[in-house]
Image 1 (cartoon, rainbow over the protein chains, first blue to last red):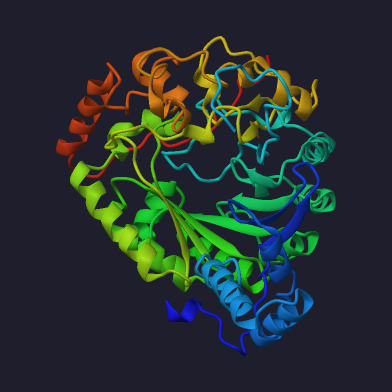
Image 2: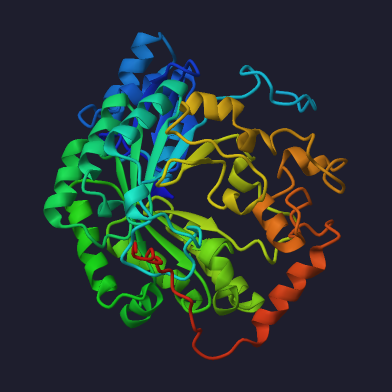
Length: 94
Length: 378
């Protein structure tokens, strides 16, 4: 659904009730939401840490591409896929 | 992880629990006939103290528990609810208040939000006010709940609406999803009644016909797709019409623990119905000790306890033989396969019960959940 896909000016954020947490017991990053615990890989963590509600989607992609010296189009596709999926689950607000 | 048959006797093999369900009290102003609480409700004077609960949550967080669900009864009946929630937040637990809304005021909701509550889950009994109040056994409950939903969203808290589905409201399952959207919920639980506790005593009045269930399930599944990104729909469908049982609790003693108002640690709500299980209490033992060593938690871990048809079944690591309490309730033995499974020799009992619901007519008469008062002392 198109409404669930970020556009360049979206300012994605984790809404109240969704938390990114490093779990000491399991030694991994987890995304916590009502009745949900989602394991997040290293890439997802880097993306989600940047979703602070002030940075735009475009700025997040730029920052990641630069920080990891990665192909911008590839990064954009990854970020868009992750945020789109989490927005459909109401775990990210766009 | 491989599905080897060794028992869960080492901590390496046994992961940390993900969630704790704290039944802070059995007191509740509502009388919902499907309540999962036991028939013998714990009286107020036997409830754990504030310091008992804060100790339990500190231990749970240290052990690796992530989600803390505050339930009851009605947790707002505890005057120390804000203190308990503040402590949760301090120890880093994700805190979820499961409430009927009755007993909350707007000031109290704001206080809970400030104390660090992460999420609130509000029950509704129906989308139709007179029917909702009849199901709850409480006049005015529905109107009050609409107000509470508004206070919760105004306080900035994410809201889940929870509705239990049965014969009296099954025609409005879709309406209840739409009401949840209107109330600003980000998530809604549409849960068909499970027959434990009070729900089991009221089964004849609650169980819908198979056709009614199928129509409602199809409508809610369609809404799930249509409303993606608007609201998350968690749909718990009835197991009486299924071919295989549910993986009850995600496996016995695998994901979480329940603590009753008096401090008994249970692998699930209904575990106390199983005879001869030894439950430990948080008054005497730590959460870690209970999780690893309590006889009740170890009773149905792994696969050694299983009988046929489970023992040789390839699905034994998928559904763990289903629900132990349902196996007990319907076959008389908790070690049997859940009779929901079509492979169970007792499967005809499910068909029998499901068939009885087909000819049920008229307004259902409920045995409302009520707390029996103790006999006064001589």
